[in-house]
Length: 372
Image (cartoon, rainbow, N blue to C red; front, top):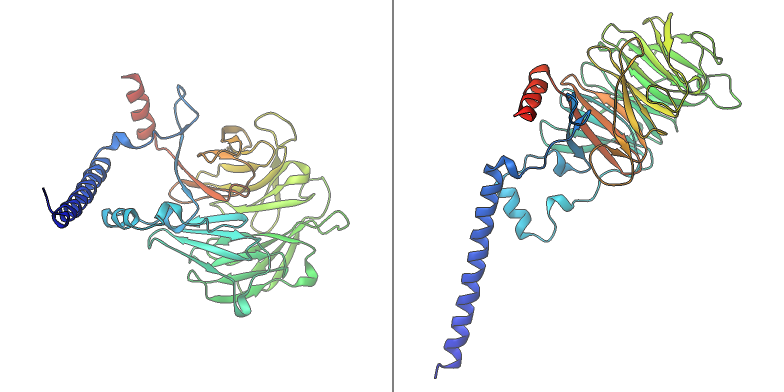
């Protein structure tokens, strides 16, 4: 007969041995996953096979863990803790607009009343505009200049607030008496020209753009309410192209308008409709290095890419509430980084989907791989 104490000791040893075995098995599994690319989910391309792909989904941003480089130590820490990095709370309450440049991703959150900055190079997320003289009330459109100064259109203050890349408040631009309903901001690369978009309202004729210089001095008004060339009806978004031309998404007239840097009208294109290439509920726009124009649409629940002449190149995304890449419930802000990455806000699903334009060699390699 085995003494009870010895049996208990043996049981304790068995438990320890079992825990050690499980832990070692977990280490082996982690190593296998890290070394075996085949275990990763298949990438999503647009257009889908068998067509030649031009865009791939890269990531979805919801929390700091989404930009942090996960090491084996991180995985072990998550395994031993009650809350893993994947379970972190969503940092967004109601994201509205996004702008990205040189590894900095800036997202306005209207309901939270601040702006979130994803510093992808440092793997950090921080908020700005929540204290002292730089406190935001209703942040809407956001922009970045070449020095990575952050410009925020605050609908509550009816001013654009400017911060450095770390969130230090620098200055305010715009006079409240000159604006009916500030909704967006755009800035040139050198920061010398700052455009404020006045969306106006049903009872207001101030549907226009106001141009300021870098010191915050008012320069001129661009446009007025109407449907003619250079006129606006509820404009919602702006962008500046590589030549410094200003583009305005004129939602009430279902078109994009292009202006010279001084506000001189150049051209417009777009039409209302239900087919791809039309506009139904255009919400935001961005421009890439080739001067292609990207427009999110709340009715189509996607974003569409046009060339500089307004010809449709590619629609991306589908509507729905599934938490999957490229599925949008209410797309809003959009930005194209100099690395050809595309950042798209979904207000309802509280996420930023990140896509990337494939270069010609990547496209050909994928086509060759499919043919094998």
